[in-house]
Structures are given as C-alpha cells and as structure tokens.
Image (tube, rainbow, N blue to C red; front, side, top):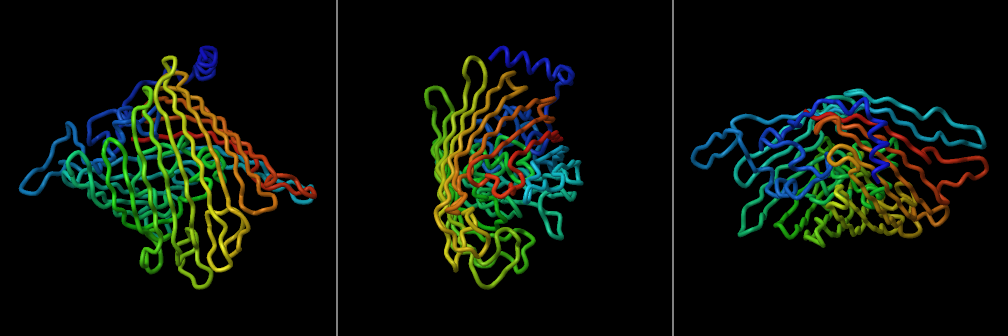
Length: 436
C-alpha cells in the first residue's frame, strides 16, 4: 500500500503544492466549518457529523449571526454556493455489421456540458430547513423552461432524541430518495462515490444497485421522516414528474419506503438499509409528459450497507447493495427492469449485486476506488450485465477535486453478435469539480 501511495504522489507531484483551502459552499458558510467536517474522504460522501447535520433538516448553525424575534430564528444572511464541473469523457463506439460507429468523445465545461449550479438554503427555523439547486447552464440540473433543478423543504420537529416530520421535495432527476437519505451506497443519486456518472451512467451503475435500475427519475412528492442516531425511516408518496411537469404532480400515486439502521460495528461507522419502490404512475419515465395507455409501474426492492472507518491508518469505505426489479406486463411497464423499452411486457426479474470500496491512500487528499457489478437485465436473452470500475480521486483543496474513472462492462448483454456491438461497453471520465 505504501508503494501505491508513493506512486500516486509522483504522478500528482505537480498538484501536490496546491494551496490548502477550506471549502465555503452553502452549509460551510452557515456552520462556519470546513467541508471535511461533514464529508467522508471527499464530497459528496457523508460522515457521522454530516449525517447529523442533514438529519436535523439543515438547521444547525455555527458562528454565523442570526435574526431572532418571537417565533423567528434565521441566519442573518442568505447562504449561497456555486458548484461547477469540467470534464473529458469517452466511451467505446460500438459497431453495426462490423462497421465502427461515430466517435464517442466529449468535453464539458461549466454551463456547456459541464455543470454550473447555484445552491441556496439553510435554516428557516429551529425545526425547518431548505435546500434548492438552480441549474444555470445547459449542463446543470435538468429543466425544461425554468432554472430550478431540485428543491426540498424539511420540517423535522424535535421529539425526545429524534426528529420527526415532513420533507416536501421536487426534482427532475434525483428520484424519490432525494427527499431524505443518509447512507453513501447510491440509494440516492446525491450520495455516491463519483461526481460524474459516465456518458451513459456506466460508472455509477457499477457501484450501486439503485442507480443501476435508474431509480433517479423525476420525482415530486411528500415524505414522512423519522430519524435519530440509530437510523431513519422515510415513507413517501410521489409522482414521476419533476418541477417543470405539465399539469403538476397529479395524485402522487407512487410509494417510496426506506428504512436504515446506523451503528458502530467493530470500530466502523456502519449502516444497513432497505428501499422499496411501488405503485403505478401516469407519466413516462422522467420525461415529465402525461400520457394515456400503458402505465409505468416503477417497482424495485434494494438492500444496502456500508462500513466506514480506518485500516492501517488509512480511511476506508466499503459499500454493497443488492436489488431486484420484477418484470412488467403489457399494461404496466416496470421502467426499473432493463429488459425492455417503455410499453414492453418484460420477461424475467432484473437483478443487480454491487460492491465498492475506497481507500484513502493519502488520507484526506487522494483515494483509490474499485467496484464490481453482477447483474441481469431481465431480458431473458442477452441478460447478463456485469461491470468493473476503477478510479482515483485527488483533492487540490477541500472544495476542488480531480478524479479519473474507468469502467468496463461484460456479459451476454455486451457480446458482439454478427459484427454488432453495443455502444458504451467501456467508459472513461476525467473530472474537475469546484465548489465555492
């Protein structure tokens, strides 16, 4: 392991002299704490303190001044933060009848391919907090006419040593789990190992069963949440319609249920949980367009777990998830089952077993990541869909990170048949993330 660390130091020597800085995004400003106070190894993974802050509904406040009065207790300024990404990405071209397809390379810079997003939020009272994201460019949060990408209001009231209340949320691509989630297993798309999912989601789908199924649809809904130091429960009703949906969110016909326990396990910060998605929707899978005919029945059950701690003086994280998405029918398509397009009946259950690990080879500066997926698409024919991901991250500062991620996929779903190979069998992404 020491040799790996020394090699990484040599490769990144030019960046090793970058000035140290504390990140100052929305909640760092509110609490007066560095980003490392809340994040495990790097953004966006949460540590125990970060979970506590989120579990309070973003209400914790530090050195920042407050405006106080009868039934009033808010920060004396509105906290803002900017998130940008610049990347180079490529994926294998594929072929048709032995003829290679067009080039599959792209650059993304802030507001043009890459993300340029404004975050705002924080404490609204001692029991309420807010978080919103405005995508300011073409590569920001998905939107179809407005600038709001995602937003949620957490009304979590202190009850003994717990917090209980409602989370009202809407997004165009974060899914029902965006409402409230504390683990880093990819149960919510906001808490995953990498900042860029890959040109076709190859990287994140290698690490998380929930993300393999594509549970990060558009979602607007309300969740009942209860949490304390021992875990949390999230029971919600939602519709697969984002904040720009025509006609609003309808009757919230879909159900999301999530429970997790959190504990100390042999010195590791451990968490284990289960997710359930059910019901029938009246919109297409994430397109925000209402339609008549075949209904969406986004069904999946996922169990997951994590261990975060130290080994041999280095921070380590282990993450695993297993899920199943049953086949749909001719009148109710399960969009989480990879076996067919919208409106197809499907044949068998889709399953995914994902494991991932991250080692801080230079603690709090550089990590090495590995992940593997063993999955079945549910198609019945050409259904095995496996993947291996390897990656490295390096923090130029707590709020500026570099990462290089490579994923290769295998199995019968990726076999070349009659000279035809699917696009995106391999993918590579070089990413620069900046928060300020």
